[in-house]
Amino acid sequence: MKTSLLGAVVLSVCQLTACGPNNESTLQDQAPQGVISTQQQDALNAANGVEKILLDSAEERRKQLEAQLQNR
Image: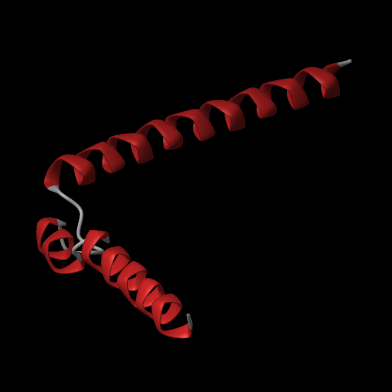
């Protein structure tokens, strides 16, 4: 009885190992970590430009509101 239970456990472990993901092939298919493409870098640069425009606009609006409040 113990032998058949042990055999079933070993067989189950072997099946799980055989059916698991193949780590070697998935690691080779992935791009290197920490490296971004030129397209991603261009998008990041464009987003930084938009952020600067929005921050400058908000600062200008803040200055205009302060000026209006001081004139009252």
